[in-house]
Image (cartoon, rainbow, N blue to C red; front, side, top):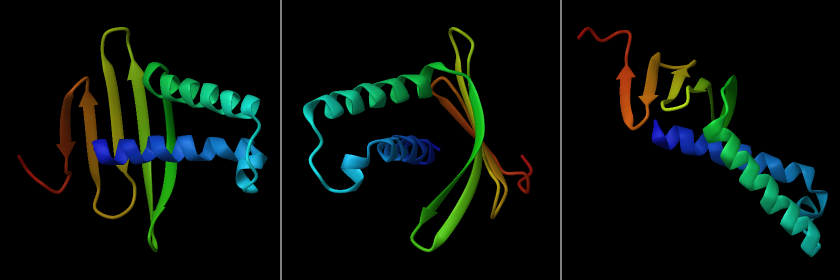
Length: 109
């Protein structure tokens, strides 16, 4: 789950560069643009940890496309994340602070 969450956060970070065309065109960005980009990246990182959100994301790895639904909740002291795999074998990962659980519907425990 950590790997998938890290991948999700990387996708969010990389998508932020779309807002800075000078990076996309290969030209060096002015110093002010670099500072703005760094400030945005810090905001994104903080938001991913401190805000409640839910959404579906799609990512491509080689020639495979995968879809997942993520929910993040923060109730003051506890950080809870739920990651549901939407294609392939169904499974669900839940992280409550540092404790991670994996649920596989086909498996009886």
